[in-house]
Amino acid sequence: MRITRSFSIDNLEQIKDQLLSWSQQYEHISWLDSNRYPQRHSNAEAILAVDALEVLQTNYLEAFAQLEAFQQKHKDWLFGYLGYDLKNDVENLTSKNNDDLAFPDLYFFQPKKVITLRKKEISFHYLIAEEATIKHDLEAILNTKQISTPTSNFNFNIQSRLTKEAYIEKGEQFLQHIHHGDIYEANFCQEFYAENAIINPLDVYKSLNQISKPPFAAFLKLDTHYACCASPERYLKKEGTILISQPIKGTAKRHQATSKDVSAANNLLLSEKERAENVMIVDLVRNDLSKTATKGSVKVTELYQLYSFKQVHQLISTITSELKEEYSAVDALKSTFPMGSMTGAPKISAMKIIEANETSKRGLYSGAIGYFTPSGDFDFNVVIRSILYNAQKAFVSFSVGSAITTQSNLEEEYEECLLKAKAMRSVLTNQHI
Image (cartoon, rainbow, N blue to C red; front, side, top):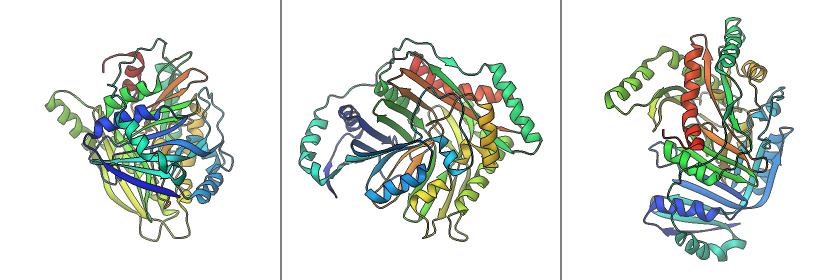
């Protein structure tokens, strides 16, 4: 049982900074921030969960069944992530690539303390056993000194798993599969990493978030595993019986000069290649949602709409459905996972070809970070534009990808990967972006 207490606040951004700093005393932290992005379907400006009462961490074997049991047992706030390699629980697939990050495939925790922020209000949703600490915690948060966004100053060498030549060579393999009719599209990803890397994950997150200000930012601390996520993409949200998916396909660089920036946005919006990529994934998402949807309820409410972020323009579509009564929240996730924007079409064939050509296990990258509410609703992002860190191994990593289609120019796809990697690299090397 939880008790909720709400208080008025004056400075939302200051409280955010204070909350994050205050939270670092705990071993389990989930921070989710919308960055006040003017998107629809957002229930709070930010959510913080700390101090695990119970934890579920597992590999992919029967992972969704374990999550179902965990969620049904507690029927409470649960925070955590779904790793990409849960694909092996959904389909007859394997993951045999290099895995230096060593994140569990699935990790969720039931927090003792949940704090939500709206524009003028902070609300504490505490287990009854923690009720007496609410006012004490509020006072401690308000007395936490505001820390300005730091400048990263780390001393290590970032390496790539693939040279440009190797990327193009592997990209040709994808194109051959497309020409043979095995797939129409696949998301081909590559990893950048550093060994013997000592970082301050909170500093990294703050710097990365400041650069991008995305609507699905996340900071996770799960013992010695950290995620610093600046994702612009929603994977799936459940509101009552309604499911909402918002895949991204289509990227263009932003420019300081207004005329050049407007031109880049218009070119993206009118690009036949980018539109085709987006439509393919929309069809895939429609098919995934239809597995659990009431008849006739799958609808495309936005098709390749232009959304602009600090670093890039993106094409985003919105697909909704109504969940049949016999399906659970976890069923909705399992039937659509992994998300189509990070796999390809047809999905199973694309995932097999991805596994054969990529050089690293994706792990949390291209998985999903999010939460369940006590009523069984949920909201999960797509883990992209993210820095992942194993503090015990002193290993830091970020991955990027692009969609390979019959119209792809592999040189341009490689450059798109570098564009997506720019923010992460700049944070880790203290370069101006």
